[in-house]
Length: 423
Image (cartoon, rainbow, N blue to C red; front, top):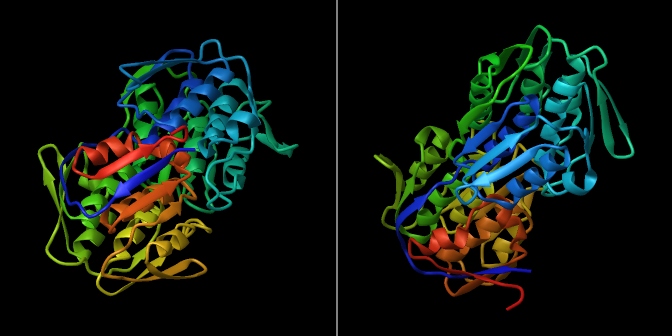
C-alpha cells in the first residue's frame, strides 16, 4: 500500500493548475443516461473515482472513451440495456447512486445497490427516495438494493427536501428533466457543482430555472440531445492548495481558481492573516509575516464553509496563535484526522461535533494514517509545515479526489514523494 513522504520546513513558490471538479464530473457523467446521443465532457479530472464511474456506466451498457490523457470523456448511452447497478461497483463510491434518477426517468425502472464511499457518516438515501417518490416512482429496499419503477412514467410535482442534500438535488433534477409536467424542488442545494450540472442539462435541451438558489424549477421535455460541456474547476482542490502556502509559508498562484467558488474559505483565511488576491490566471495566496491567527469555523451547506475543507483547515489552525473552535454540522464522524494530527504534536480536544484546537509553535513529523479522502490531504498539508519527516500511510483514499498531488506540490518547492508499496 502506497505512502506519501513529506519533508517539511520549506516555503512554497510557483503555480498550481486546478483540475476540473471531481464532484461535478461524477454528477455530469450519469447525465449521459438521459439521452441516446453522445455527451462529451472537457476539463475532466484524472482520478480513480472517475474510473469507477466509467466502470459503472459501462456495466449499464454505456460506451465511454477518454481522449487527451483523460481530460476529455465522451459517452453514449444509445445501447444502454442493463438497469442494475451492481454492489461490487457501487460500494466503491458514494456518487454511484446518481445513476438512479436518470435510469428511472428514461427507462422507467432501475435497481441500484446502496452506495459506499468514505466512512464519514450515514449520508442517508431516504432524501433521494422520497423526492423520486414525489415524482411518482415506486421504490422499495430489498437485499441491499433499491428497486425503483415508474410504471406510469414520472410526473412533475412540488417537493421540499428535508435537508439541502447535494446528491438528492442532483438525482431529482436529472429525473425531472424527462418527467411529464413541472417539478418545483424546494430547499434545493446551491453548490457550484449543481449549477454546473444544470448548465450541462440545459445544453442537452432541458428546461430548468433557479439553479444556484434554494428553489429549482424543471419543465419536463420529451427527450434530451447530446452536448459538449466543460467541467467547472474543483473548489475543494482549489481550497486545499490555497491552504498549502498558508501552512508552509510562501506564495502560490492557483491557475483556474475563482474567488466565488471559495468565498467562505477566503474570508476565514483573511481573518487568519493570509492574503488572497485575484490574478489574471486565477488566485494568489500568500502567508503574511508571523503565525496565523486563530479563527472559529462552522461547516455549513454552500455558500457556507465546506465540510470537505474542514480537515485541511484544522491542519492550518493546529499552529495558529490562540485557540480555534471547529464545529462540524454536515457529517458525523468527520474528526477522525484529529488523533493523527495529535501524533504530530497538535493540541486538539473533540467533543461530539466540536473540535477545540489550541495552536502550537510548530508540528513535528511523524508516521500517520489517513482515514478518509480529505483527512489524507490534511495530513500531507500538516507535514509541509512540520519539522522533520511525515509519512502518511493508507493514501489510497487520496487518488479518489486529488490528481497527482505529489507532483503539483513538488512543482512549487515542496519536498514530497510517493513511496510505492513494492519499494
